[in-house]
Length: 88
Image (spheres, helix red, strand yellow):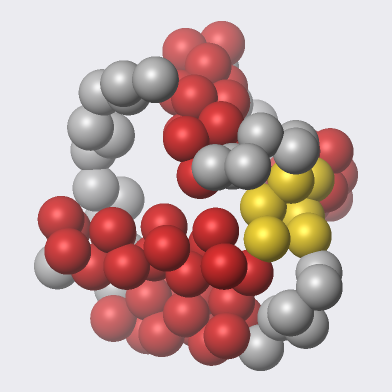
């Protein structure tokens, strides 16, 4: 599946470090589902437009390389490496 290159998020160096630290700190067998992300967004009061939600779903599916409906530590590390390559 070919996806369009998403725009690079405008993250501060501190935010990048925080995200990388969280991923590296995950247990190796932990997986984060789409529902986990939705629950987090609800708890934080984050609302997305239909277009933003479609883009988020497309990105979720692109990162979910084994198509099991969840992101593993390895998948998130690979996504972070792609971010670093294309956005930094």
